Length: 278
Image (tube, rainbow, N blue to C red; front, top):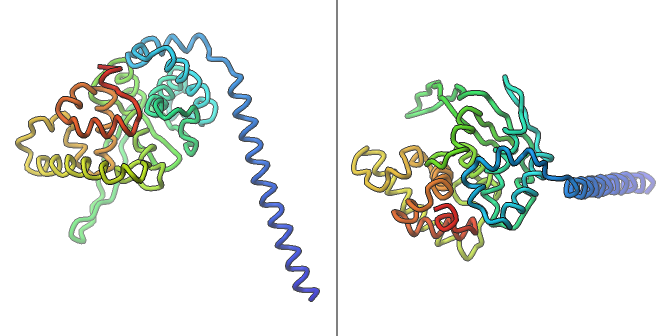
């Protein structure tokens, strides 16, 4: 009895300590959030935002909303520069595009699970082992960005070039689309959506992905699929990220050529980018 009683006491103590730590962590997070809410949006940040076409086209209400999201983002993420100094410009541009994707979601807590953003000055080479028919080969790839669980990797040369002009491509949008895709625990091209909308999303995206993949294999008959690019044919996750780029960067073209796809993205992101950004 003494042994079992002591064992029970140990488990009870450990359980109490666990819940105390959880409570303390939750308390600290809430306190941090309250402190961040009091922080001002620095006037000098407008030097960067005012040059960004997406920001200039936002309604004033949305500008105020995204400013608060930016403040939260830059004070809750760890920015790490590799071979460069992380400037306010880098932080503001990255935070803006990351939070722009969620502006229709009515949340200022952008990417709670994201911890670190690593910034390289230029595109980087990575090694990757691929297998085909039991044959393994080590290959090198040039990347401009990468997303993995709680970390996003970006190259500043490309990010800055794409941020001050609306183009088809935007590496920041692309990598944070992957982060959104992973919010349900799996990067598969299906972001966290309502169960009632799941079938419609899968039907439209798989239809367009299959068409694109077929065209990419043949490398002919591209037609309207040139807008999506061959990179989107790699897999469903890349398709979701590339189409997210087009949804925010060239929404009018996406709506014209892929109206069903556009409507699914508009419903998910809760923003009509064609009307807002043209």
